[in-house]
Amino acid sequence: MPIELAEWLETPIGQYVRAWEQRQVDALVSNAFGYHAVQVGLPHWDLLQANRIPYKAWAHSPEAPFGTRAGRLICEPEQLPFDSQSIDLIVMPHTLEWCIDPHQVLREVERVLMPEGRVVLTGFNPYSLWGLRESLPGLALQLPVSVPSQVSPARLKDWFKLLSFELDRGRFGCYVPLCTSPVWLRRWHFMEHAGDRWWPAGGAVYAIAAVKRVSGMRLVGPAWRKGRKRRVRRAAVAPVANQVEDSQR
Image (tube, rainbow, N blue to C red; front, side, top):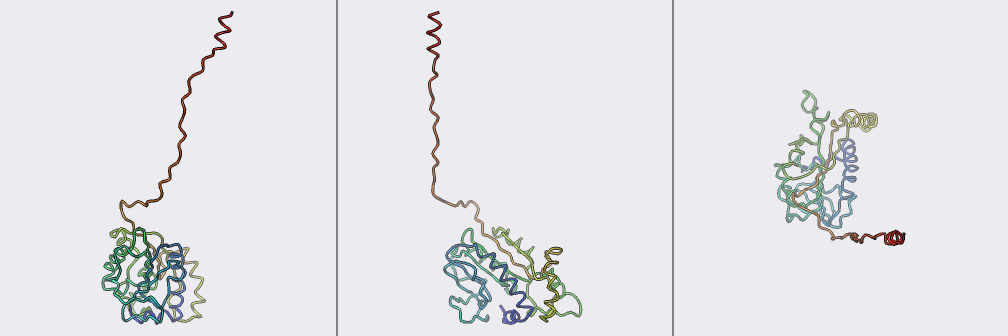
């Protein structure tokens, strides 16, 4: 992942995007359980802070800024250095957009995730006002460099189906027009509520969570046997007293 993205996230518009993604990812990973969690990309930005999984790691490419956090792994996202079915949670902030083969990255994620494991992804929406701005003549996109391969949520859904992932939750955000001034960011803040209500799929950024489903898998738990009450057949009681009285008459 290029260093330009990390630098752009420190600008006013980048901090606006970063704050929104932090809130969404925190909500998506807070209830994920297990033993191992991995963040792939942007290791200087902790997107696992709201999760309670004990063992965490931050994987990144050699050219990415990584700071001083412990648990760092240098690798390429197309070849994750983990055993198959060994990870419970994977978070990928804008990872697919700078990969050579985004589909191969998802295949690796599917390989290393445990059954019922969770993956959380964020990315720029190519069908937002920010994404369409790139196609207009005379308007240069102010995103960090030109995003090599913008992966739309619709394409992600198709890849999820091919790789046995089930879409769990997703959300769009950042409806403010692309501007660099903090003053204009505050003035356009009302667009957050308006866009979320009237144009929910037009947010500049998305956050999506999916769960790995394994066909034929069944969760094994304790075999609790409920006691069944057996019906006891009772012999019919003949009206003896009535018969004696009738014979005396």
